[in-house]
Length: 140
Image (cartoon, rainbow, N blue to C red; front, side, top):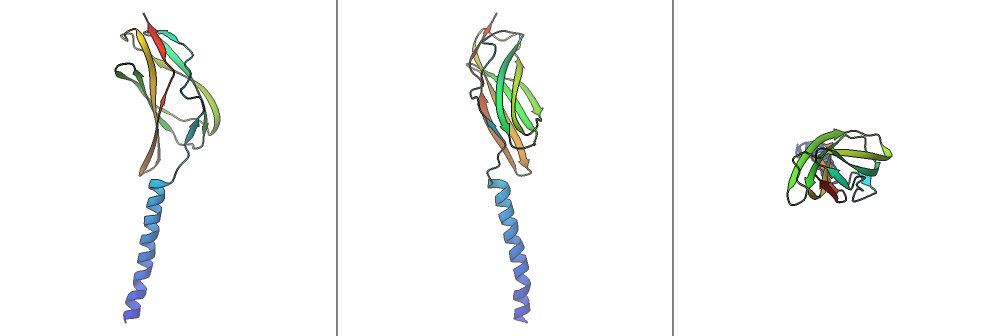
């Protein structure tokens, strides 16, 4: 009778161990999302008028087809969140020119863009990267 009770425990123990291993995989495995090559991103317009667009170039290798969430902020002494978008690009090597609208009420001065990119790789994990552009000047 005791042998039967002990034999019934092992499948439960093994399945619990497999679940723990799977959870560690979801939480800790080093997923490869995107590799950026030209950091900080070069700005194509070093002088921009308030109310116009600033353009910057991005070179990357995308390893995953997952869509990415982009939050772009304008930075000098303070931080202004400019846009939040979702981007889906094909896997592989790519080059893109992104543009960001500079609000008309922006004061003249030196600024740079800060871009937070995040990917939800599974239900338990989101991978994020903080990227910046080169400095540019907002003029009147």
